[in-house]
Length: 81
Image (cartoon, rainbow, N blue to C red; front, top):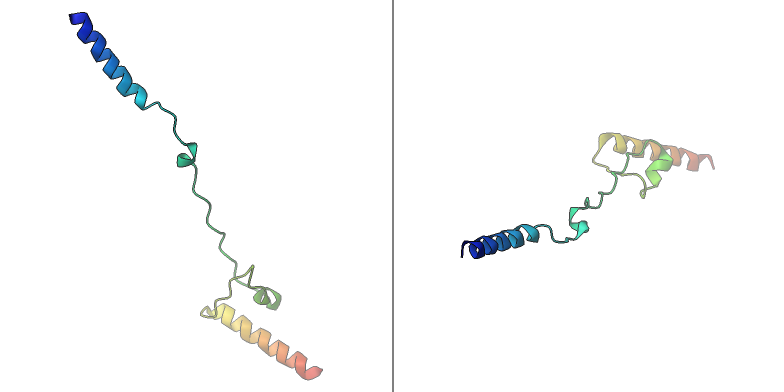
């Protein structure tokens, strides 16, 4: 009788322990998709015009000053023509 209880206890313990070793989806442990790289601030008029690669935030004082400078250059170039 003691052998049956021992066997049953080992069987239950083995089933409980082996359930933790079951296959799982490795995607659950994969790193999440990397966030999009932050866009750089434009430093030239050409970069200011390319909004796909550079972040144009007119609330930023440096970007605002660059825009004013580029607009002034464009206006003076238009006058010369």
